[in-house]
Image (tube, rainbow, N blue to C red; front, side):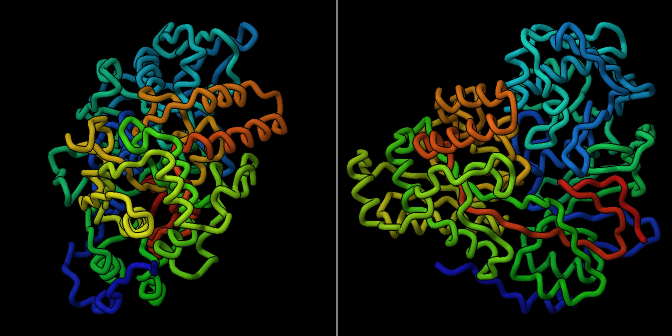
Amino acid sequence: MRRRTFLASTAAATLAAPRIGNAQAAKPLRFVPDADLAIVDPIVTTSYQTRDHGYMVFDTLYGQDNEYRIRPQMVEGHTVENDGKTWKLTLRQGLKFHDGERVLARDAAASITRWGKRDSFGQALMARVEEISGTDDRTITIRLKTPFPLLPDALGHFSPSMCAIMPARLAETDPNKPINEMVGSGPFKFKADERVPGSRVVYVKNQDYVPRNEPAERTAGGKVVHIDRVEWAIMPDTATVANALVAGEIDWWGTPVTDLLPILKRSRNVAFTTLVPTGTIATMRFNQLQAPFNNPAIRRAIVHAVTQSDYMIAVQGEDRSTWQDGVGYFCPDTPMASTAGMENLTSPRDYAAVKRELDAAGYKGERIVLFNPTDIPSVKALAEITNDLLKNKLGMNVDFQAMDWATVVQRRIKQDPVDQGGWSIFQTSWGGVDQFNPAVHAFLRGNGKDGIMGWPNSPRIEELRNEWFAAPDLAAQKKVCEQMQLQAFQDVPYIPLGQVRGASAHRAELKGVLTGLPLFWNITRG
């Protein structure tokens, strides 16, 4: 299947683009995300839009710099006692929530606990926690059953679920039920009264925020805000976005589609920043609570039908410099990546043989609900390839359901059967940094209903994950990850579909754009 086509010529007609606003000396920064902000609580979803929103509103105890090192953020520092089983974290002076209340250690303790029940890395930490408490207003004490040297890494990793510090009254709520009251201590305040679902999300500078006295690097360092107001403009039509960026009516397009890059590159007023140096990795996620994908043999058969290059061409086109296939369960060109079991994805494809596999596995024509998000071109392209693969090449019973991404985010948490609004498959992409190792890899879990949407159950993957945490050195960690990849090809928690390497587009006058994810501090208009 060839890639989708766009009427790129329409994007050249910039005079036809609707006006979004008039240029002003102190105009807001207007950003176009990939999709609307469906859920505002950064603990209950792995949606990147919610994560990006979370970093504006909330702050974290630790941050990550440009070298992926963890550095203190809300904390001045920490001490480790009792042979690594007692950690004492000291909050910085002057931290306040948006409602004017001081940030206290008990707020942080409750926030860690709430986050740790949902986040993959957090769950590993909480399995070793005996008690988290605020022993005074500024001291967070974490007592562990066994040493956990990666504790700062857990609290400071930025994706997919940040450890957002919120008031205890919010943090003590059920982490499976989203909160809507956005009271953080971060560099921006969320303007709920100006939010227009499907159209606009608004933030204003938190005038009381006290940044660290250090250069900003990703989520670490001094979060100095130079822009008083940020507006997210939800614009599903990509040609309209391109027009608006060239005309200066928006300032930043998070993920420009490949088809329109030539038009953007012809404008001297548009610049590009590689936000995610490790690229993004496309994935196919199954609902393993429902037939037919509760059957691992059926999932394995689908692996044997997938051609990663089909997906990459659909998203990026023929230029192989912008994508990579032959991608396994860990980010390419990082220490945990390996070739173990990769013949499952790279051997010649034989659809007739896969059909026989499906028959032998017991597929009996069960309806497969496949989400088709119409407002994110790259994910829509992935879904279209999967639809063609399953329906046309393998003869499976596919119900291809069109909806926006916000609806996907809301529906994919449902565990109901497909005839009650449930689902079978959705596509998404993860930053490569989120697949560096088993600690941060949310999709490479086997903890069933305690995990995130898809809910794969694999005791062996969980055992290997624990072995990785206990491994004494890098060589031992790599051996564990080879075994994890082999096991993943047996249990198939998801299917990797390839790695995309793209850039974000913004007005050339924007200076100080950071990398890692869309971050709105440190930016000035040059």
